[in-house]
Length: 250
Ligand code: MLT
Image 1 (cartoon, helix red, strand yellow):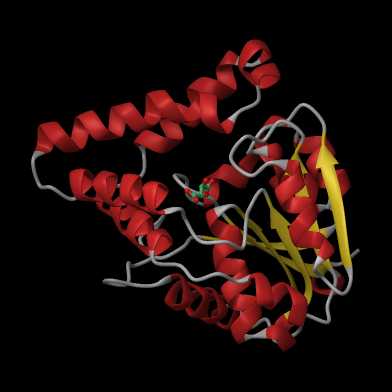
Image 2: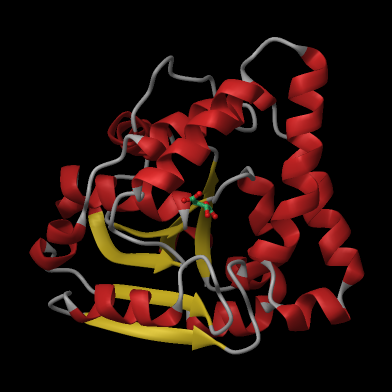
């Protein structure tokens, strides 16, 4: 199939990663889709938006799609933080969507405890004190893999565990701080799902402890045209943990 005839698939990465988190599925996806792998503001080479909200980030995604001269509808796929942005995009630009694909994400806001943990981390990352910044970055890189990856992945794929750590350490601390602040202030988007006429596909790892399968099932059940795919033995990052199964689900 010629690239111009393929369905456009826009990818939005999760936290604390940039668009390179999709690298293990890109070649598999490109045989089927015209893939548009985007960075959120401040990530990769994308300029930041000072005090940008998740809604501002959704407008930036729409701008990036226009900059690529894509005028037709797109399949929009966001993972976790990318899902928060995809939901805001769906609220603002519903007619731009052929499908909304939500991976390991949620529509609800943070608990007050989770919000305060985020803001404390943001303060430390933006403190300007290099030793505090480095200590916070290394703590994040050490702690996150066991939260993000399933026990199966951790026990069988030490290389991926190491890659995840390195990916985290490659993101600028100020960018991570800004992302934590934007996520802490996000709104509840449950009603957005209900309002959409396009298909809404949920994909979630069976062992995801951050966004458990039941939570994703509840979200997808509110959609007019919802469908849920569960990726066995994956945690919060199915595209990295089970790339072939993830692409088949998509
Ligand atoms: C992500 O994977 O993007 C994060 O779990 C999102 C969050 O911190 O809420």
